[in-house]
Length: 328
Image 1 (tube, rainbow, N blue to C red):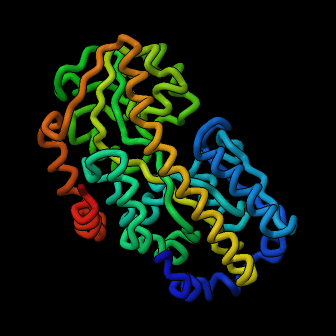
Image 2 (image 1 turned 120 degrees about the vertical axis):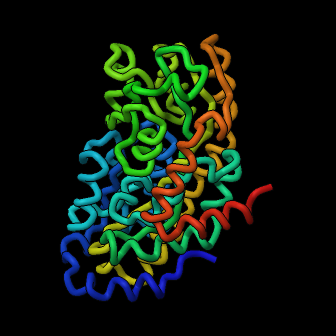
Image 3 (image 1 turned 135 degrees about the horizontal axis):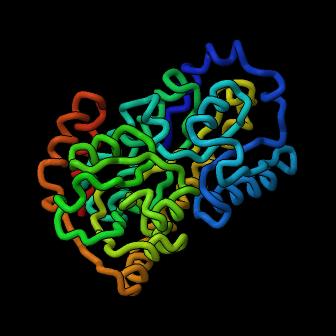
């Protein structure tokens, strides 16, 4: 079962009244991402655009703007809200800044492994969280993708969580991961992706929180002494359409776009499930100190995060139940 489109349609009644006629009639949709052109998310966006053009008989097309060409995610989300941007593939992290319930996806060790993360995101319960987005954020969420689980790369030796205390550690700028590293006693440092390689190389940051794909493909390991394989958080992505743009589409176009966008963001899950372990093995083979850890490594930080987010997100208990039900 997919998303409840009747619920979403009802939430968009108000948006219909203010739909921007130019955006509604646009046949060349603009889709923004922060990821570079070779990234799995960007490739999925290009594939979505190509299939939409094919299935619409050339009536619609999508121009993809990768690598922050249209701004950072906060700026692109504002553009979606006004209808200036039609679509985006965006981290759930950014959306959770406006819809805190979705921050529950970042519960430390919610997923046991990369396969489990994918199963969680494909449940009806996870998809139901998207139904609030038209009213709370001004966007329509059509499905989830993901990146790999989060790991830690450090310029120094790391034998325990105490070794991370006080370190300037690069994070994606959103509350769930900020709260986690604050609980750990690190100095979380928000930083956009294009700045990370040089910042790690020149010591502007001491460590980074990153997935295996980018650690390997963008060679962050080159400036590391230690790679900590912790798998401590999943990192979902969501396919979004501006609610203003959506309100101006025909029912037929909504159905087609919803089907194809959900298909292509979901394909990212399969890609990471297939490739994540190989990337980790390649990183291990670089000769860097490679440490595998579990929840105990982080001490009280996991429990502290859970206490904070049980107050911030009403979805945390439900997602924990979903995780338990989908575990193997």
